[in-house]
Image (tube, rainbow, N blue to C red; front, side, top):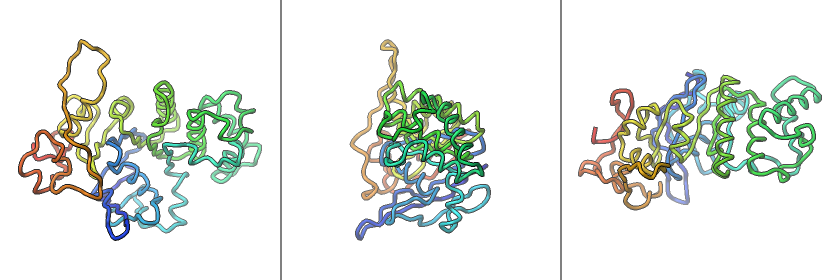
Length: 317
């Protein structure tokens, strides 16, 4: 395995209060695999990604746990050591590409600089690689458009450019944090097929973060379901979809639209809204919204346990 996250706990200090955004999260990302991390907004998915690369804001830090990359504990690395890992080994694509692209430099300048920073090539070679990469992600007339600035591209094209920029560093693990959230449905499908194609071509692993279980199921080899800072279920797409165990997973699946109006399916409703991490409920964090809640659920917190091929954190099992 390449990435191993073990008992990760990430907290934020907000005024005098401690916010526990990620609480005792463990998972692995093996070599050349497509892993999905799914959950509602506010579940802690993005904080998990930022924790892996130590990109947390000033008021956030890893309280405990460890993050191993190729057997090395990157959570204990200093700033220089972790910089050598970022990009070259583990790369991160954000939801809004305009937050990552510099508006005052052309696309070509940014990609050429990145390629030369990570590879021993001259400017002409870096330019040729830039054109080839932009062509690979389907940017038309790449030899001309590399002279354009980010604002001259659509959001979908900016995301393609961001993927090309990231792939230019030849990472072995790509963390894609809601890469299609700001795109329309047609462009979303194109973007995900592009990621899948690049994953096979470059033999890299991808950790795809999304709130859309349908997208996760279509492209991922293994699924992690997250709720309020904790992993509540793990399993293959076949296990998760054919026999979802956790009531939260069942609710997520029930929210996926069914194209056939004649095909009925049981309606699974959630009661109330997801509480904020600043006001975590006692016991199982999902119990205030769960239709299968028992008295035990409000008193103690279930831990992940194997249930055949998958794992689930629920007192029902």
